[in-house]
Length: 402
Image 1 (tube, helix red, strand yellow):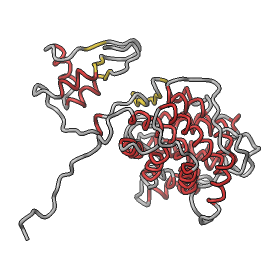
Image 2 (tube, one colour; image 1 turned 60 degrees about the vertical axis):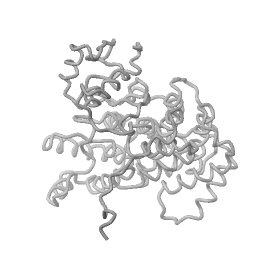
Image 3 (tube, one colour; image 1 turned 90 degrees about the horizontal axis):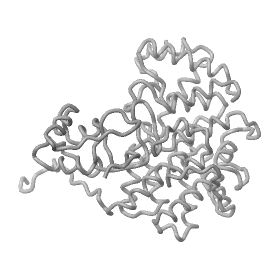
Image 4 (cartoon, one colour; image 1 turned 30 degrees about the vertical axis):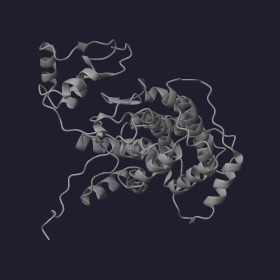
């Protein structure tokens, strides 16, 4: 059944990738009556019913790719297409001016509401704050987030209910609790206000709040990233939401995922006063300039583009010296290597432009991604359990050779 909104439909490129053929071959299948092409308003090119493509993939007529459960994950949450990021069919950059709570609820349920509020239990928030006083004073914010998630879980005896209504309720309270636990403000603050209180030395200064809100929205989900896959595997075992989020937090705790902005921040700190000199030093060392290019996007990262646009607006009070240095680096790198700044570059620029702690990008990424992880857990709870039992290829010592 064809849906007017494009649900359960694949683009030509997606169908070709699933079948392991070229796009031209997909249209050859159409002419032979093996596939049915459909046109949808607002969508370029033809689209194909996912079940029809799957049926063809199981026949000898198609040159199939050898894929497993991971590549067959169906999701209605996030689409990355033609340089744009969409949440449930809506452009994420256009959604970034709305409240973080509103977008979280939308990503989880498909309902875009104006007034959404998450509430934290002040007692649980206090317990989380007390626990984080026991850790090393040099620990990172992501360590505090992990502790807060684990402690919050112990106060939720109904966390094992994986029904959608219960999970959405738990997720809202979890976000509010973790955000409040990171800062020292009231547990009645919004998520964005709590985060601002945690990262800004003078939280009464409103400059940067709008950019922070946009950053959290734009980082909320990015498809089947490594951490999101980890969450779906955990949810497939019917782990509760808190355990699934913990799986995601474990996956992003590395230099290639959640901490990818660290080298960008270090580089930018050396470039504020002399961006050309810092860039020359970086190139002379033989190291690439961090914060540019992306494995998915080819000519622009829409998240970085929107955040940098906001940072350039004087109304948001970002340090103009930092913004000028960042723009100089962007211009020089783009002209020499024909590449573009990514979200790590934008988050590091945001951090320096408001004088925030060095691990702010990692903290924002982890907190925001709880939204996407929850949405993927919700989808996975509706799938058959334990579907990620992947057979490995044994390459060790063969039996009988001793």
